[in-house]
Image (cartoon, rainbow, N blue to C red; front, side, top):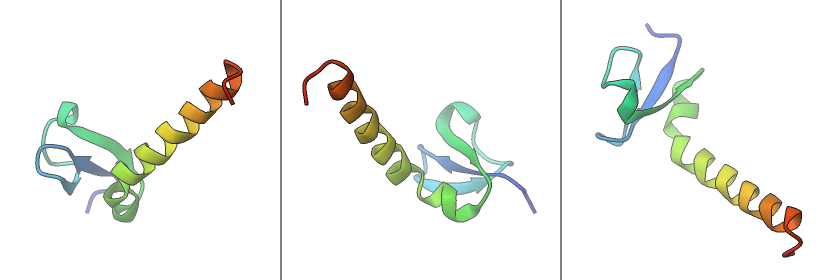
Length: 60
């Protein structure tokens, strides 16, 4: 079994290394669960970066 997992943006599903081309996927992740949470993780990181940008620009 694969040691790395990916989240496929085409199929909206978790895949092992053998899957769609990497250009269509997020990852790799160490666990299947982490890959399944890829969109949530990305959204949380984007929000944190937006808040950091606001603070950096003095817009807080």
